[in-house]
Image (cartoon, rainbow, N blue to C red; front, top):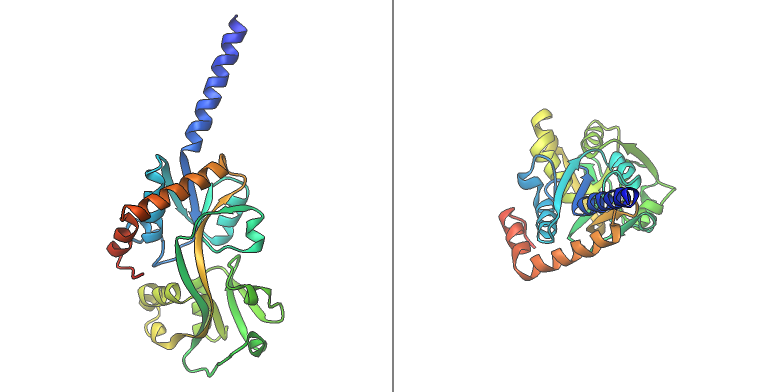
Length: 251
């Protein structure tokens, strides 16, 4: 009898701990303003949308901001439940469940204004040094273009500084994020940098952003279903639009 009671208690405690873990949703990501970031109000509009969608489903939500390589490593091991704001790629689908899309990002190249770099197709850029943040996806064609001289950098700020100093010819990233980092951060340390760098056409991709739930996370598929349900609810009740309006983000 005592043995039966002991195993019953252990089973109940295990079930309770699994339930508690299942109702907690942990994210790790990189600073990506104006979409999300540690220093933005409520961690940015994407973070607030995600948090609101999950809280309506009775989850506790935690965000950690780190390097993208760390984010990929920790979610890959299941130490955090999900990446916030990931692009969907064929490679990532192997390890993550992707939610319904949350927003869209225009991705392409930055250059120094004094350089005369123009292109229509990627092979025209084979002689240029192009900065890419480690672990980032840019576009299917660009990511597969192994004939290009891609220089890995630790983060976008590092890449933009290298571009400004002439160590890179181009820097690949999001238009709005690059412009935000230039005007709100780098300009304070390097006066004039924002006015000397520009985003160029053609745009490489209009990438949708998602939450990407690690397949090693506890109750990963249930969390995916619950998030998508919560996102639909805040679309329908108007909270999604209210959050974007509050952060002054146009549709």
